[in-house]
Length: 453
Ligand SMILES: Nc1nc2[nH]cnc2c(=O)[nH]1
Image 1 (tube, rainbow, N blue to C red):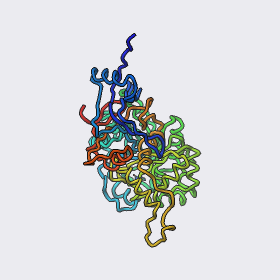
Image 2 (spheres, rainbow, N blue to C red):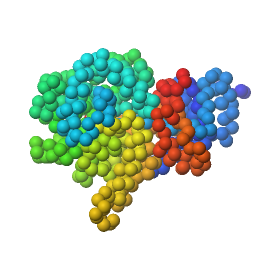
Image 3 (cartoon, protein in one colour):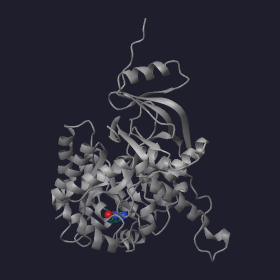
Image 4 (cartoon, rainbow, N blue to C red):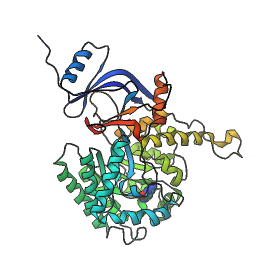
């Protein structure tokens, strides 16, 4: 009996790299990545398998075959685990100011402009397409306090084909937020968060690419105990992800100690905001006790290495934290970080970790200068940008394997006149050299969002 040909939505023929652990990457030469009609990878067929040729020919006949050039590679799409969508127009501005001054003079005045949904639509359209163009297939976004603008962000994600996790920002503490940009009360902050949950649920009825609402207390200083409590209750009621900033700076750490006589993480925990679906940005000043709390609650950390150079007051000890098996992904933190590219953040994560290991004060003896055993490899940074982020968001993506969502980027290694021949060298060259123009195609749930359509 003749085998019934299986029809795939798309078949991509090429070589791929995917993480297998926080320190290892697998290279698979010349495969067929077969994507089913729901956007999942159904099979990966090696050239040595008996039906490689028949599947390839069937895909070619049905015009669903994409064949890569010899210098192109398939990588998982990246997950930006911390990004402030409204801050995109400020990328690169005022990074020499301290965090609280930067917020007051640059960030809050810009975010207040999103009271105008037309302004929001213009910026969010530009941002979402730029992120996809940089290989980011999923993003965990902070929005603003305004729901019409937050809905524009969700609609931009759907229009361009990006998976968004989106938070209506809650900030109701009148002492730490400007009158022109604050929730009128804790009740308003919580009610509008709940309203946004309903609005996204309605919007999701119109699309296969679901957008997820996220409970988003900006950070402890901008919220009152009443809003923190109300938001913790909502997270439980709807079983939703939570995002906030935690121990990002000495100032933020000091605020919790002064006002609550507790550590920043303990304040969030008191109000039920540290859950297994919580993602806390930065954490540069978390201590060993905080790591234990995060481990117990299964909280993830969004490491934002470029931003941390400006606002973090310390280098996050990524290797130590991953060693304790905490979940961790990578974020751009636009506009605390100036770049929309997770490639740039991968590089900075490696560089910062090496500076942590060697130390920075040249007047100290070598054995007192740094923190031993801190350097991470590009493989570890890649793991965070892919599988680490996916795991933090409970998503079946970030890996190229059967059963995973086909969120993929096709990258061209065009910069080397003499291309490296070892897999490890090709991988490093890709991570260190890729810029936006080298990402030739991007797929989210198997649907193409960048490249010739
Ligand atoms: N980096 C950063 N930290 C914050 N803490 C509170 N708000 C912000 C923000 O917008 N960016």
